[in-house]
Image (cartoon, one colour):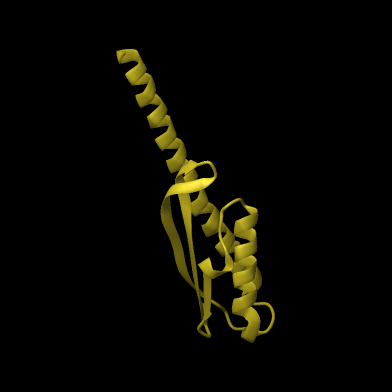
Length: 117
């Protein structure tokens, strides 16, 4: 009985480590996508549609990387010389039959200075 208890404790510890590592991975992935898209797209094109293009591109690339997100979770605000970007998503901690029973809400917010052309 004692051995079975320690097997369950070991499985639980591995699960906690795996879930934590995947949560950190998702945060780093979103951060990387935001950096890449803003650097790539911020200085191109018309200022009037810049925020919309960046928001759509971030939502598309984050979804392609395997993180569940929709366009409403991404906000981009063009303030002239700065660009405020915010991304909110939740990482599932416990999933049962395809439903997320417990999720960890995460967010990444950053302000970028956009150089004048």
